[in-house]
Length: 126
Image 1 (cartoon, one colour):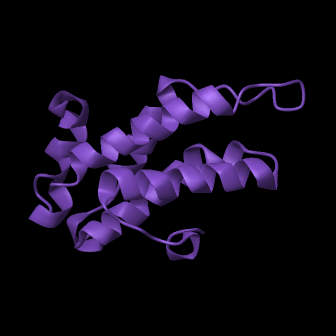
Image 2 (cartoon, helix red, strand yellow; image 1 turned 30 degrees about the horizontal axis):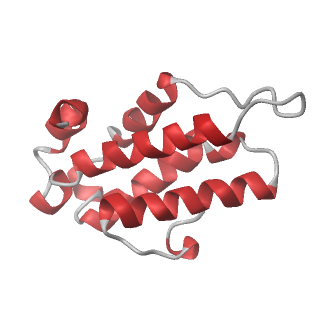
């Protein structure tokens, strides 16, 4: 639904049209990956900090609200920023390579399903 993207959409309304039109898809991809993280990355004694909540979604959007139109001229620029923010909020908390790989796979699938981009991890990974 469009209401999910209203804060980001309003912020991006002064950006190039190619950029501002991505807002609903970015929010849907973020929610999709968040739901997958909640279902598959469950806390264990060794991973007790694997608790994800709605604040994580707001942290992704808040990070994206820091960009300026001068630094984000294309849709690809915005998608790279989104990948960075998703990694900052979610991936940085993961403690082993297996979980980080699973997260990267989720991001790749999210880009393909929601953003029509089929990027290799090296295209956006830090």
